Every structure is written in structure tokens, then in C-alpha cells.
Length: 91
Image (cartoon, rainbow, N blue to C red; front, side):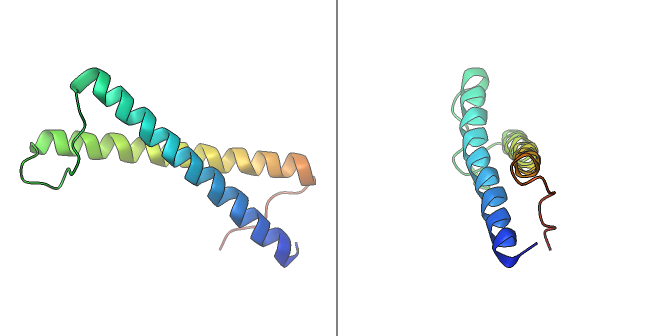
């Protein structure tokens, strides 16, 4: 793989993960609002109940992590389909 391919792959995979992360955050916020009301603006604030802070942090963390994983795997699948080669290994 050339250096250009490696740079292109890093941009593609990072872009896919970034866009997915933003979309997932919006989705989790909407789901939280429909079930529990407004999500905590700052879970670290002493004004926020511990259980709510932990639940919010776990929810957003898990959803964003899984979403980014799926985005990167999807990008790798698309890369292979377009180039006929696996994506460059990430360091």
C-alpha cells in the first residue's frame, strides 16, 4: 500500500466513525428524552443524581463505541469492495 492509500484510509475510517458518533449521540439523546426527560447536561455535576449520571454515561459510551465500531467495519467493507484490497493496517 502506498502512503496515499494509508492517508486516504485514515480519513475514510475516521470520517465514518465521526459521523456515526454524532448521529448516535443524537439518537441516544432522543431515546433518553422519550423515556426519562432531558438528559443531564453535565453528568459530573454534583447536582445530577449518581444513578442518572452513571446510566447516562454508560448509555452514551456504549452506543457511541458500538456505532463507531460498526462504522469502521462498514468502511473497511466498502474499501475492500472499491479497491479489491483490505484497508491498510492502522498503527
